[in-house]
Image (cartoon, rainbow, N blue to C red):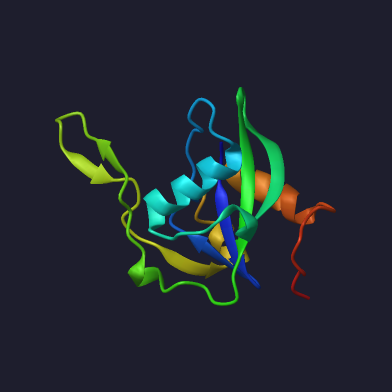
Length: 135
């Protein structure tokens, strides 16, 4: 499973990366994307609201199933809440995401790692990109 990217026109929901995770055994990629988006942002979407952008090579041995969510109005970043936590070496817990931003595309690409940026740029330049590109 991979990123669930959210676009509205030319803006991207970004939190240093995109909500992503691993599909559970028997869980369809789209169902994993819905679950991860809910756990990591609090946003609730249904399968028909997501656009399947395919599976893309990310890291050696790790591909990303990428979905886009097109919405007329982006959510208020201040209202997003992560309910998924990571355990620290000392036993404490921290949320997987602690801040969110709605950013223009180019700025958002600078907030993610180089491999995710590469995948997203290749996807955006490809024929399957479902959104109009800004002039």
